[in-house]
Figure 1 (cartoon, rainbow, N blue to C red):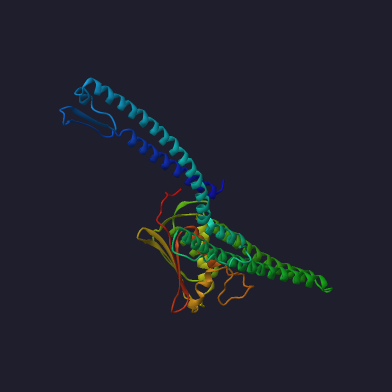
Figure 2: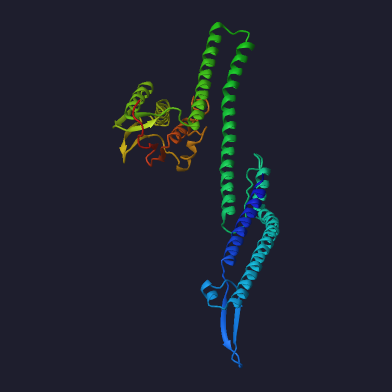
Length: 391
């Protein structure tokens, strides 16, 4: 059953109900109307009494008792006739009203069909326009004119949804193109190393070992890239686990581990910061932040890791002393495959901060990235208040 048919039936039923209610009220008012009756006695010139009776309804019994017997019979007969005529009038009223109600119900259904069609015409236009929109022309909009009513609000909401969908599709296309490029580069390098070993007739065992070491390095880079892509997809999907976490613990472990691995100075100020989240994703977030802060730095630079609680919300802050970061590059660094002063073969693929942004969004945390005037950048993440106990 279409919406137009349902609206038509609704209009018809409402008219039928209101018409029947009006008929019932009219019938009750007419049925309980007693009318008006009067009696008058006058004397003629020759001394006779002339009684005039106007009977339009019932006369009170007390008035009938005051009449002479022969006049009382006349009045009672008149009253009986009035009741019979009133009964016939009421029957005709019901029959004719029902006929009129039936005819008008049919007319109201027809008018309801026309009115419903006119009301739904903008929706049909929008439906046709939406059906014509695909991935190839998602830039098109409904752009419905007219006053600000429910249909206009619906059209504007759909236009907003199409805008977000267009942005998501563009981002997806860029992501796929960049991922394909990142994967193609090591594959090309692998093929070149293998081809060089095969076509070199004077290759020795040591040459093959060197090629294999280079292939292992390329393979490790591919593995890190695939792992990063998997983490990015997992974090964008949402949280599978929610546990109570104190950021101070994993932040300290990650800071010490990366400081030893890179021989870098990592200063910590770790105060309790209770949050709720996925421990694995939170640890990956910390690792990416510290790794980026160390990688995008200057010789003898410094990284500061701070945790704490403000207004009941746990926060994490990581700053470094790297080279100056152009302010216009800050937002771009949060998108996949964006590098700052880096090359494609250094083991970094430009996914670090994009993974951080995705993990923060999965935890409904507020992410702030700011370029420091003296160089480097400061990343601050404020998590929602803890709402589950530690497991």
